[in-house]
Amino acid sequence: MRILAVTNIWPAPDAPHWGRFIEQQIKALRQMGLELDVLYVNRRVEGMRAYATLPTILRKAVDRFRPHLLHVMYGAIMARIVTHVVRDRPIMVTFHGSDLLGQPFERPLRRFFAAGGVLASRQAAGQCDGIVVVAGHLIDKLPKKIPRPQIRVIPCGIDLDLFTPLDQDRCRQQLGWAQGSFHVIFQATGDPVKRPELALAAIDRLRDQGVNVELHFLRGVEYEQVPVWL
Image 1 (cartoon, rainbow, N blue to C red):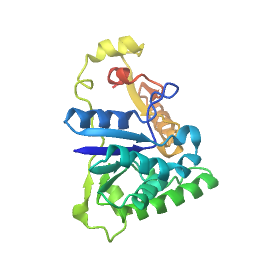
Image 2 (image 1 turned 120 degrees about the horizontal axis):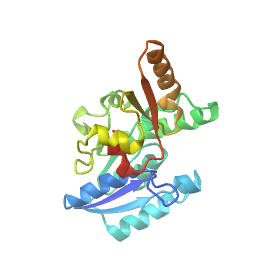
Image 3 (image 1 turned 30 degrees about the horizontal axis):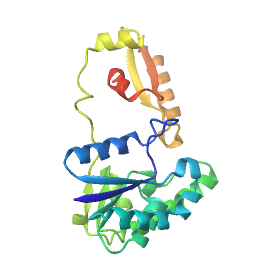
């Protein structure tokens, strides 16, 4: 089976963590024997202009690769364009969160554009052939008319060859963390929706109660080092 994966997040030399999980999913699907080609919509560099050229680029990619299936690996405007342009073969869309929930903690203008993205996601969901959501609560944000059997809840996977149990004391020593402290890891992506201020408040509460605790923000860490942190 040939699958054309369409995504707007993908690692780059100056942003190696940007869309690393998408890259890992593509790698896993290829290891399963599926033939995949990736159409990268470079929103990070080009901004919204990337979507203006997407219909033309998409048609060329479909004509060249002739996929049996298109997999749009994020919702919002990108998914809406793909489901509008391609009508002659099956399309599935994976929704990851903000594409259905919006960005309620952002600045007003950003919230406005995010709301437009949510509307586009719902329109795309109504036109595609299959839907994946990475968490169960996202189902409630999809249009009610979509048949439940058309939806699958599939969380992002884990590379169990890399993420294996390691010696805790040795890892703490490698990272320079105190052996006698309780350590809390918070994934700080820079997105306000993650609410880092709540993590800081929780740590302050623990310290007020006499707990010897350290907070570590997981950001800018090499992928291969994440198991050591965990």
